[in-house]
Length: 140
Ligand SMILES: [Zn+2]
Image 1: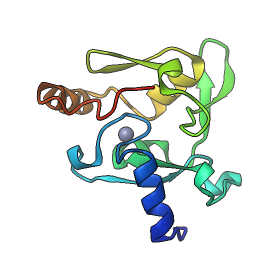
Image 2: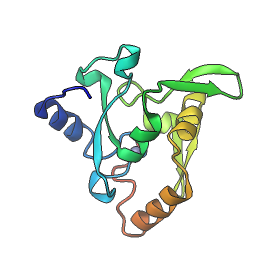
Image 3: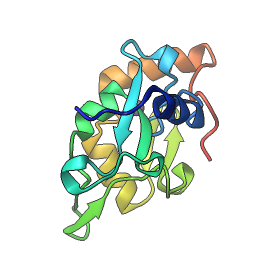
């Protein structure tokens, strides 16, 4: 576990509007809340600086683990994950009802490895959409 100060945690949470920067769920709407994620994991040389940190729900963060990318089947190439500090969500993903669809190779490996669309998460999103709580903020 890496020490990240309360001040940095607050900055990361507020910058993200307190929603997961990957699947866009608000921390109040996910049972286990959100936590600070190292976009490039420490294992791969990522820093503790705010530009390497993102706010992520536990579901996204657990599936991501220390990975930083995967193989994009269409090209067979190692492809990095979506980076909330560098990339625009709407360039790599689109919402089709409650399904997060990839638009790019980066989107594809992120959707697959983060398991964005398993049935449990789709049911959760459907419930949130019905009360107007998802997506927590309009994707940029
Ligand atoms: Zn998430």
